Image 1: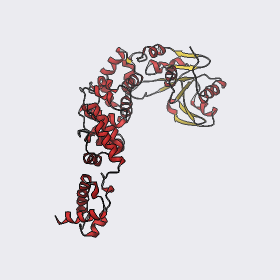
Image 2: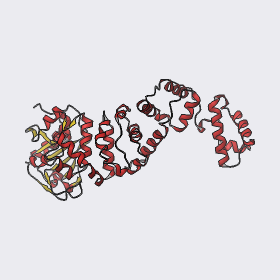
Image 3: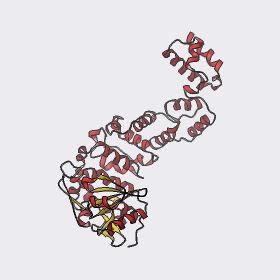
Image 4: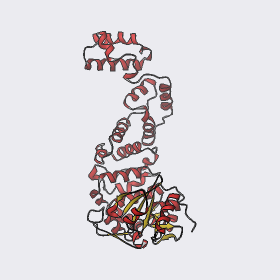
Length: 393
């Protein structure tokens, strides 16, 4: 096997540990991605050194998961999670082991991991440690559990969603026994924190072909959060790879209410953005300047690409004319918001056209509609005269 390239910080971390008489390996996702020729996002190291030993070896450490044997070592600006070899005890919450036993062999550590492609270890001296056929599964494009799938999913039900996320992200197939167990046991996701489910779900939606998530959703595994199954998700793959656009498409395709987003405890910005997209998705792409302006009054310009993507993918719309008109509106600074008017509420009150806030709001909105239809009216004196006229009506 060819030598894997490890960042200098990771090499120095491993070398420091081995210089103290212990062994250490890069493990998990960083090995998987390196074998695939991808740049790992982060690096994990497994070792037979105890957490206290690791803390004593390095000047900058953070005890991020000390109860589970994990210490984050800072190598310059690179954080490396260093975890002592361990074996897990019984799981009673479908997520965390009740006990953890530190071990002395890399074999024990790898055997507790979720999927074969994540159960490999590497250092320059020993080369690749692959006890479960992870490299072969990488080459064949397969996601397979380490050992019995039912055991792995019983230990941590979140692995069911991780299984799909890895398959979607890598473009792999899920091995049949692993897939069968995942679907059969998917009801246990109800026992997992919704925040973790949200992370995995949005990770699935970020994949190239997220429509393959249908197989899992059709089990009804997320009905406890309000997600409907049994829908055709094929058009989901045509949506631009944008988090909010794909969440909106998922809700629309499954006829799921926006309350699902709150049940997932997503941040308010995401919830609001997706809600705006779903509410405006039924509007056909306008082709006249006034209609574009009215659309922009409800849909921020920053979401126009997401809106067009939804209309193209879900309704087969030709959006070319509408896009061109949108550019015309923006490039020519045509007014479409109250703030674009050359008059404000205080001036309306001073003119005597209105006396209090509610009246002012009504008049400003009516002025905006008039200006949208005829932008030449957007001059202070014309607007004041029109405000007085509207008030008298």
